[in-house]
Amino acid sequence: MLQFAGFWMALATFCGIWWGHVGVRWLEARSPRIGPPMIVLSVLGIALNIYSLFAPNLTIAGIASIIGITLLWDAFEVYRQTQRVAHGHAPANPRNPRHAALLARPGTHATSVDLLDREPTGEPVVIENMAPFRPKKKVEAREYHEVQV
Amino acid sequence: MTWGGIALGLFSFGIIGFGFYWVIRMEYFLGYAWWPYPMALGILMVVGSLFVPDPGWSALLGITGGSFVWGATELKEQAVRAELGWFRFNPNPKPRPPFYKLIKKIPPPHL
Image (tube, rainbow over all chains, first blue to last red; front, side):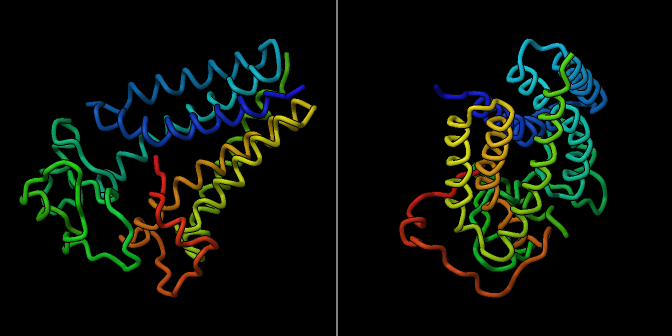
């Protein structure tokens, strides 16, 4: 008989990491303030870990704790994502007032261009030379010039 | 009250942290073209976990496998980060993985 505990844990781990990457980026880019999402993620994370202590079996307890601990870390990742946006390592959302303020700051490194949205070339990339970058969406030329390192 | 779930959660947290480490090292020394190998290793671990009778050991194997599958999807993005100067860039030629021509035909997955 097959043992599915490992399969469900693998799925929980993968989904936890996926949310930690894609979900946190999405959430941070749309939240005018980072405090509320950080609190919600922390409360959910703690609640899931408490539930795992009383779960009926190891599989459910493991899934709850894996997702719970991942959510607790994601609360911190929301803050780290704001730092990435400020440094231009993640795209700023001009429609988010917090990001718009970062983009308007003199000498900012923030950019609305997703610098990771490209294929590797095998060579170091000079940021000022934006030729290798092919953003999915059409980006105004003005935005290219905003990119500084 | 059972602490087994919390132990698995902490193990998952640790293995994800280790994932960041090996993704950076693997991309630096081997390059992102090796992505199918950690992916295959991860899938094998998850499939293997189905045949481990003990739920605890099965869980540990599954968590490790899930983390390796994710790491494989992260290698391409890590290569871009290194080229952008956000991580140390390795200027030396990187070894080609076995079945390189076949791997090149498959777009590297990323989240």
